[in-house]
Length: 451
Ligand SMILES: Nc1ncnc2c1ncn2[C@@H]1O[C@H](COP(=O)(O)OP(=O)(O)OP(=O)(O)O)[C@@H](O)[C@H]1O
Ligand SMILES: [Mg+2]
Image 1 (cartoon, rainbow, N blue to C red):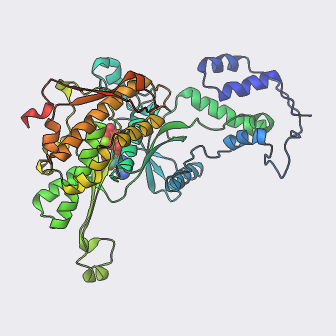
Image 2 (spheres, protein in one colour; image 1 turned 90 degrees about the vertical axis):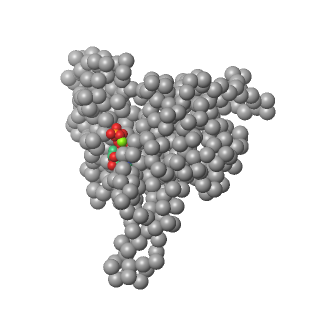
Image 3 (cartoon, rainbow, N blue to C red; image 1 turned 180 degrees about the vertical axis):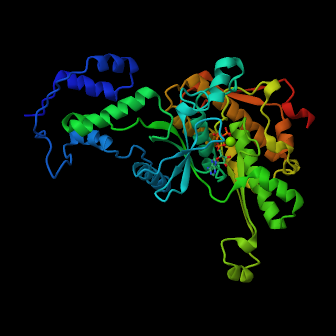
């Protein structure tokens, strides 16, 4: 005979597994004092100890005992890092809040306590319900009209983070530390009192009434959806190094490499129309030749080695606007003030991205990849997504022209902004031979006209 669980305990299980606060309130008042359960395990359960072999129940047990939710079969490297993060959390190496940030962002650790990733949960973003920063909360409460950026889809920063990584990989820019959407739970995240209470109750039930407890879909705090970005080591804010480079001449090959990497950053930011690229939101790693991973003795013999220089574009959560920013608060690209921005685009970047960006199919593939990512959000809206892609196509059009004309990044940002709208008949993911697009140019002067 299968386990007999009375109706009330079923309700209890459903309630604790559900997300409804009202239900929890009602149920907690009518909790049965005398829940009774059959003493024996279900005959569908076979095998050793408490292991579950029935296919019907297996997935439930996987959830209960913390089996992993995040699966990236196409990307074993990413999969591996996420597994390490999940295991570390289970072993008590909990993510730590990054205190300087404006939202709830966390450094995620491995089992040695070393940071391996940056997790930004959706519900702790500035627009999220559980943003832990009280200054942001006050701002949203007291001055809602000035809160956030009117050109961005609210509360989708985590998608923007992962979307930047999609663009980066697709164009092989390799400057965004790999970022995908994952689900993680940790006691150190910001949860509301109800979630914490539910989790405690489930734990107690599992300890005291294991027969009931095993029916829960999940024990512990609910996993949060957010972006998880690989942590890059030995980097410092671009601001720090750029100031140093002002006073210290780099070897020519290193300066050229930095210029190429800078151009990749420009390409990324322009395509995703990043509204938040200050010089603290990109990082540079610089290691002069003599100290590059060698002992002093070794470096004496390898002094001809090139120094290491690399760039990481982090904090991409405020990009992919659904309209071009209004003129009076245009969120400039701060790199446009750097001397590197006055240099015409190099052949290196032209060769890397121009063939792809000039190909309509490539651009549509990119839109499709972003569709696959963005559609996973609960608040996904097809029309808003199309508007985001219209802005992005317009940016790509300008960028392609600027690269062909060998313009500089400063000249690029001076171009009038464009949107390229896909005709309604072709909306969605279907691609037809007769697809048509409408370009519209903004007549207002670009923000950088005085540059
Ligand atoms: N992938 C990464 N690798 C290494 N360091 C990182 C990474 N991401 C973030 N950091 C570090 O954490 C700091 C905060 O990160 P980030 O700017 O992404 O968070 P945030 O919460 O959006 O902050 P803010 O709103 O202040 O910009 C960065 O200045 C950087 O020093
Ligand atoms: Mg930042």
